[in-house]
Structures are given as C-alpha cells and as structure tokens.
Length: 262
Length: 259
Image (tube, rainbow over all chains, first blue to last red; front, top):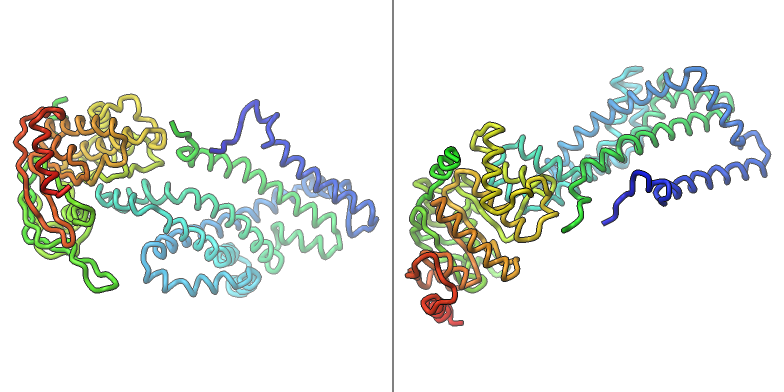
C-alpha cells in the first residue's frame, strides 16, 4: 500500500521535490519563451511578479478573492447537496435513475457560459444568481461521479445494516457517508475546479467585483501581466485549499484505508 | 456483570416454525423450484444444523427465516409472529465478516446494540464484555483490515451476541477459515451458545462441524431442496471429536449424504 511520508523525511522525499521541479520547469519555460519572443503580449516573470505585488498591496486581491470564494462556496454547497440526494436516489432506485438520466445528460452538455448568461438575466446582480449558475453547471458532473460510488457500495454491507435494522440517519452516518467518502472528496475537487470556471464567467458578464471582473478589466486595458497575475494568485489560493485543507482532510477521513494488513 | 446477564436472559432463544415452505427462482427456462415444502420446528435454545449438497437451498432457507427474502410460499413463524422483513430478534453471521471497514472493532460491535437503548457507559461496558467473550480484548481500537480472518469473524460474532437477539442464523460462518482456526471457532461458538441460551441455526458443508455443535442435523436433498432426514445427535456435551461415538454419528451422516 502506498503511503505519503511526512515529517523530517519530507525534505528528502520525491513527494516534495518532484512537484517543485515541475513548477520550476514551467516557470523556466515561460521565461525562456518570453525572452526569445520579446513581445509585451508575453510578459516576463519579473513583470508578472510586479503585477502580483500591485494587486496584493493595493488591497484589491483580498477583497476580490473573498467575493469570488464566497460565490464559489455558496454555489458549491447548493450543488453538492443536490448531487448527493440525486446520486443516492438514482444509485438505489432504477426508476429514479431512468427518470433523471436525460436531465443529467443534457445538463452535462450545456456550457457554463449559458447558465452564466441566463442567471444574470433572471436574477440580475445578486448572490442567488451566481450560486444558481454554479449549481446548475456543476451538479450533473458531481452527481454522475457520486452515482458510481453509490453503486459500488457493497451489497453485503447493505444487507448487514438491514439485519442490524439501522434507521436512515444511522445508515447515512455509518454506511453511506463513510462509504462514499473517497468519491465525495474526488467530487469536491472536481466541483471546486468547475465552479471556479463558471463563476469567473458570471463575474465577467454581470458583476462589479471578483476575480472574473478583474480579469475582464485587465483584458480591457490590454494588460497581459495583470491577467496572468490574477490567474496565478487564484491558482495559489486553490493550491493552499488543496494542500492545506483537502489533502489533510482526505488523509484523516480515509485513515481506515491506509492501515496495513497484519 | 449483573446487567450483562439481564441482556442475555432477555435474548434467550425463540421458537422458529416452518410450515410447507417453498421457494422458486425465475430462470431462463421457466421457474426453478429451490425449496419444496420444507417443514420443521426449531425449539427455543436449540442448536440445529442444515447440511446437504450445493444447490439444496439451505442458504436460501436461512435467508427466508432472516427476513432477507420476502418471496416464498408457506409460513415462517418466528417467536410467535410471521416473518416480514429483517427483525429485531434475529442476527445473521455470514461467511464474510461484513464489518464496516471504516469503523473500529468497538464501534462495529456497538452497532449490534443499536436498538438496546443503552447509555454510553453501559454500551461501552457491554462492548468490552463481548470482546472479552470472543477473546479480542485490546483490539477494540483496531480497524477490521488489521485483523486476521478468524479475529474479524469473532468481532462479527460479538456484534451479533451483544444485542438481545433470540435467534442467530449462521451461514457457513467458518468456511473461509483455516482448519485449525475453524476448530477453535467451533469451540468458542459452542461456549457462547451454551452460556447465552440463544437458538442457533447453522448452514455448513462441514459434517464434523455439524456433529460437534448440533442437537439435531437436518440432511437435505438437492434440486429441489427437500428434507431427507432429521438426525438427532445423541452425543453428550462437551463432545470429543476423536472418540468412536463421534465417528459413528459422522459415518451415519456420510451414508445419508451418499458420500
């Protein structure tokens, strides 16, 4: 069984050095291309770093990041609850599965841009609009992901909980939620990455703050370094969420899987 | 230990009565009769075994009594009431341990007493007592994956024994274990049965296991599943596996099964 080495061993482990090497290689490649082309449309790393400094020091970064993350979070929460209920229903009852299948397939094919436009038209500049746009765009993908997990829950354990006559609340707590935890965590990753892509569109078209709005302004000013600075800053925040929150959470919640056999 | 005895006495055996139980499965070539008019009466606190060739429907019969399969003809009366769905008074031990892999041994066993309405402290104490009974002291915080096959099956037994279930149905519970572990498990199970007074019904392929544990042994025919004979086991307990009397009962069963 694979395990991630932690503690002092980290500094000598490929777990640390390989990702850093990848980041370094990407930066070096960018810098080389930029130096060769010598065009303001492909700014060098110094210029991008300067822009990052500007948006962070001006206080714009925190304010817009908070607005965007708040919208992502509310849309994400809405989508996840809907997807979880859909997946439990569709994974367990064939009739429900047949009924909702076309809706999911259509939902998967509708571009996030369409939901962004529609929600701005319907809800205007409101928190509801952005949450609904995100939820509509990402629910189908998360639901499909979770349905696979529901169908993979072992019938033996279902029978065991039937024999123990566990009520619904206990089944959720002791069977469904822990059993689905691997797909739930995978779903959270998928949902966050999709939600962010949709929210940027909503902010570009209809809102007056947030990362998407800022990207659009930098685009209007033809400031490529500014666009990249916002993008990189957001990627950094997502990396912090992944390595600081999701990774450790997964490590803790799935500890029963890592334990070695006697 | 006083409340422990109250729990077990509450869980002392119930009577199970089958009358004309038949079961058919739909197949590509029409309906296949799996059980054909099975009638038997299992006394409270009795240990009874079902043996027979594969396909004789003995596991199916167990599932009907457990309430896991509602589609059959005839009647199954369990503790005075007809069976419809899994019931509070009945526990099943399967070939696999079926413990929740994400719960510790303690938490798995505690789920067996979900409907007992115990306080947290009482529950903890009962779990500890059961773990001691199945010789798993000190393993409460382990996860099922960390246990050997025999230990996991013992944890599963503890989960069934902790509640006030009157009847335990055992579906080839030891068949996946090695011969040595299996013999030790049989000794443990007999002790638990003796001390708890629960009714136990065992499906097994192992004739020696049936003779060692049972008061009566039901020998079944296959295709369709019928009762060939119910053998009364005359051996006094505790039983000596190597004695001539034991061999004689075994030989009788072998000849009934035409082995």
